[in-house]
Length: 189
Image (cartoon, rainbow, N blue to C red; front, top):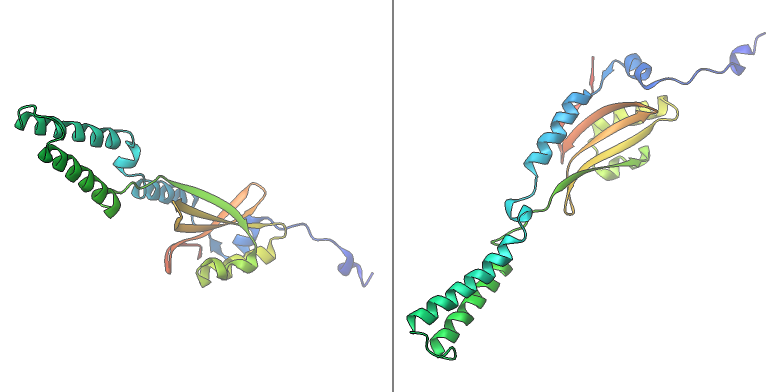
């Protein structure tokens, strides 16, 4: 029949087939896993964040020690003497000044977060054009596929995002970038 070609259904393409047909070699899962581990180590929590209880204890203890030293110098005079009051006030002022100035910073833990995104929003999310073009092309060709944006988040800052194309159990990393700098990218073979 002349119209048989119009009504035949084609089997859905797999992600592997689409990559192979286009000659695209994705970023290997091992490279992505190594990068993710390295970034977690690089942007891990500060020592003071991991040990949050000791700094307040140390401040209270240092205040008590300052009071004891002042009392020893004055020969255990009445605590209402101007010098003991002045040392205590100066210590409290210094503690507040150090805390408010940001000299002691508590850097929180970093974590990887992944979320599904529509292909049309790639430009608005800061995906580099070369990675975004490959993602849009493959997303159109592989019906049922989804795009996953992974981001390293520390507090509210997003670091080193990556983009995955997923279909069922298959995933292909299309790129990793930092701002405008592309770190890894799916390359033509």
